[in-house]
Length: 227
Image 1 (cartoon, rainbow, N blue to C red):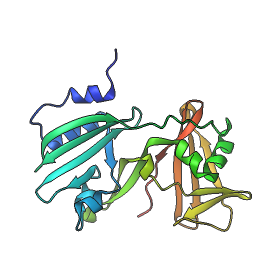
Image 2 (image 1 turned 135 degrees about the horizontal axis):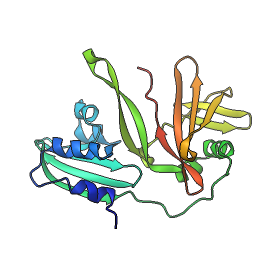
Image 3 (image 1 turned 45 degrees about the horizontal axis):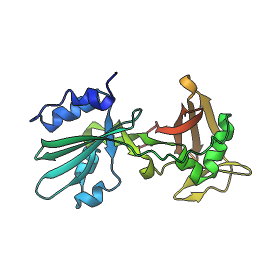
């Protein structure tokens, strides 16, 4: 039997490892930080650690922290508990999957996208358990750089397209733009599709849908916003 992604990674872990070693091993095996929507609230204050280490879920005043990583294609999660950067525990789990499957809205991607952009329930049903998001990081004097993180489907809220009778519209701050916009739809390898739109001079977003079970899942938000 072939090993799971979690088993492959756990073989590299040893008791007494530093957090940096566990982190480097996880990233080296294709795992990514799993960003928690509650980090800033859990940490309190300026919560700088939430920007520096996107995997942090919480840190207590006495130095205990919980971090999360995930492996997008296998749906596995890794929780690491630390105290003063020494690893206290690690545990693996799987993302919960909703068994109430919805029928694919269409076998033609453009029609699928129209249905996806028209209905919240369809978006929930056809979003991957983890969405890979490209973030912009401000390194101050070093300038901006990009990094990839994962966001759990229930925390991802950056799909900014709506479809109405007259076409696609951009959505910002939950308000739908008044005029229809052009949307670029580009087929890619392995049945994937890249979707991009612009709104005004600098606003816009892009998405990548992966083919899955004779349909598609929103799986990536692959372009970091402009600084």
